[in-house]
Image 1 (cartoon, rainbow, N blue to C red):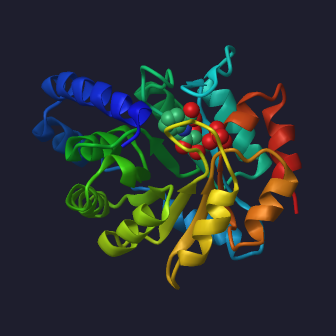
Image 2: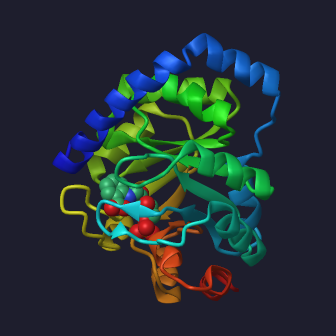
Length: 265
Ligand SMILES: O=C(O)c1ccccc1NCC(=O)[C@H](O)[C@H](O)COP(=O)(O)O
């Protein structure tokens, strides 16, 4: 595990221990039962767009990041979600990690209430309790970063997410992680992160290299460092139809126009 990822996961472990005291598993399960909220079908929403031959966008709402610092000072998750929705995004990704991404559960709750799109809880999932927490806050999908988990942990969290009717986006960055994801997880959604979490540098050749390892039945999500229509075409040339994009949009004064400009047929 890279130093950056290790540091984030260590902080997450402390934060989970605090949050779990306030909302133990039994409380989360009761909340989920009482809310009786149906999930929205994250993977299905992506396929509905991709299968029509369009770019299927997971549009990210992120205020800050370790690589970029503060990205969007005038941050309003509801306005951003509505702009993405009007522009034709298939799904949202919302950072809930508080320390380095300045994310919050409240952002996910408010953005999801404002639009009908399925939502990925973007966080560092290291404990099954967080999967319950994600469902309780309304997430339709969770991210499992293979670099942060061993196979048994990843499989346990995937099974719990599926039990709770959520989808799973598995994230890999190299051949070893891709092999592990394919061996221990059943999710169709395989995200290749172009960002090296050691150096935080993005390199689109990562997706180009790993795309060829995907077998039938799995679908590629190209993640990070995507800014231009040429970038999407380049990812499209190796089979990607689904894209996770954050920073490029967060830097635009007109997020709706920028989103339309990138994904328009
Ligand atoms: O974005 C970072 O600096 C970062 C650092 C350490 C771990 C994860 C990080 N990013 C999370 C992501 O996966 C991206 O937010 C996502 O793929 C969108 O990438 P981008 O379009 O480059 O904002």
